[in-house]
Length: 467
Image (tube, rainbow, N blue to C red; front, side, top):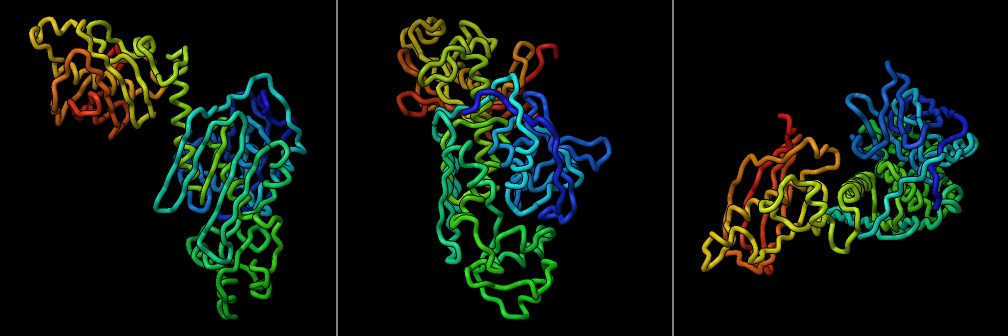
């Protein structure tokens, strides 16, 4: 895979109608400095507000991926971002004269060809790949969606679609080499929908710019003449220009590939992956993906990336089965002997879950006075170990730890189930239940040999040491 970041040599523009808004828009791609990423600029609005193409700015996923900040939005970003991601361009300013890029032919090819004609320039900064070294899964049982990222020193993507619709059936497609396959075999694949969906979509006002030239319409129902007239009126097309067709596609349009719908879903997946803000080294397997599931999956990837960034910040020596060892923990927490009560972190899902280990030895100072003849770890110190574990889950990598400290705000539902004795190993699991600004609530449980010994709901806050 490529080593250095890339941008454009020159700027280039395209003009057309937006698929969903129906508004004319000129899109201009411009070179950008290293580490800029992709930034959309609405130059039709005063002060030309900018929206970085990042997962945190996704505001809608109805038939496309919309990003926004406040009242400013950019609709249907995926085909533009797929072209940039597929050509492995890292940095670009994308200026728009309207709220939505032009749909053009419904694929990414016009954008990709324009970008190539502008020229691609290599930059003096290495690419910041997200390297997947464990399995990351997204599953939605209700919609039958599964997306998995597997470790791979490269990038591959495989997509399977199955809409339980005989007009399309099951299809799958795989991309194994961006350099060789993206431009010719995936960028030309057009957006599609079923004929049975068109009227409902038109009634929702989200395909105002659609016509028979910028989307594939799969015929999955028969219409009589009056219904064709009504449908033509809904989408603003002369009824004489609509033919149900004999090949299963409205107006007998020819598919560019027999599995073009599956390839387009893979194209959409690339566009949504671009919202991660960095290229990925992984094998992606996706069953029945859509924009909503893609966004959820990329959100998981971002948490994984943020966790890894945090781990690299404190854990300089990578150890099997350990996220943070005791040296890293001492960089994170202000506690010291005898009040540092966790030894290592073995699992860490940012803003979700953390698992810590505390080895309880006879050398603990509290055993000298806490029932010396029958030593038992004080329950309050088990709670303190839980709190220290929860203090680490509150990190998101943005805090200046030198100036911050975590304080307890509350303890609720504390229960002590079994005594903890010298020689025991406490496994502490904390799951975040609520987070707003600097305040966090989490449920913590401590286990010894798989048996629950203590549980509590805790609340804490991150505060400046200067406060």
